[in-house]
Amino acid sequence: MSQPSSRPFLTVVGLWLVAACLAGLTGRVAAMVPPLPQVMIGALTLALILSGAFHPGLRAWLMQVNLRGFVAFHLTRYVGIAFLVLYGRGQMSGEFAVTAGWGDIVAATGALAIVLFLRDPMSKPSLFALWNALGLADILLVVITATRIALHSPEGVQALLVFPMSLVPTFVVPLLIASHVLIIWRLRRLRVKPA
Image (cartoon, rainbow, N blue to C red; front, side, top):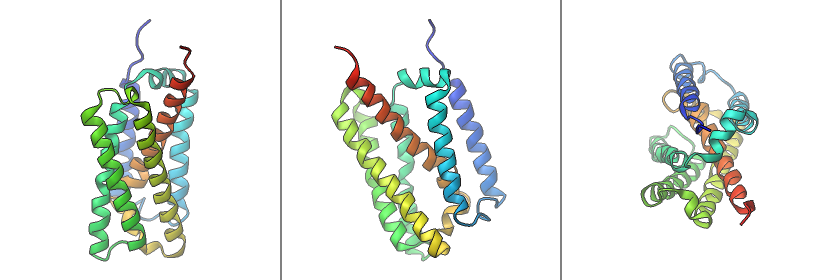
């Protein structure tokens, strides 16, 4: 039996990235008013999770793929540095930028350590679970904080809707959350495997 290929997943993600870039470049994302960006993040995240759960080919691939590549994607969380810079320029709410900025920098640094020192993150399940729990808590706090600010003073997070930052809600955040869910699923499967 042949191993499931990563090509279909990477192709779909590549096409999604192109679509997210076009939506940002054409100003469609910047034109969205709350709560549409938050609904979009939720819908994209849910679509990813449900695809992984119910599409047989994708599920088979996700069951066996080395999660190191998914952890490496979390290096995008160094975008937290940009949040702090935008705050320093007065272009982003300090309440959002400081919370999201430092939390993302810490999560990205943990991801970097895992990628550099673990060929297979599943080989250290306790450490991997700790990083995953902290990273998931951070990204959920970021989304909740951004939503609260967007609903009361949208200008505080408007920079997130302008390209290239628009890739954060339209591409990066849904993939980050879905990858955290995938890691939880794989770690649970590891615990229930027969000895």
